Image (cartoon, rainbow, N blue to C red; front, side, top):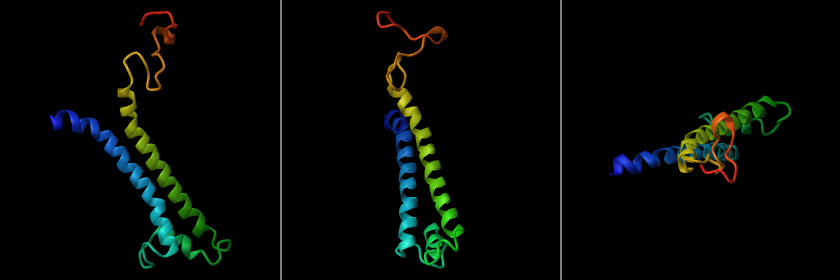
Length: 119
């Protein structure tokens, strides 16, 4: 029963939660590395690269811009992936006569049923 019913229902939720946890850990790790509390200098980290330009950020603007864009792109991509993983959840939770937002489903030729019409 657990394998047939519970795990398939939980899999998209757990996958989306895992991706969102990853998306929140990327800026956290980068921030800690920038402050010197995360990954140490011989190893590469986006926070370490940004910290290298800390003394003269305008002279070495690329050391600030490109790692920051990489962090933003990674977090946005992870959030889009999590939204894609969570979308099957929202479509299966609605009733048969409504969409995910609870609006009535479109009928033939895209018309929505009127308030007095029986579905």
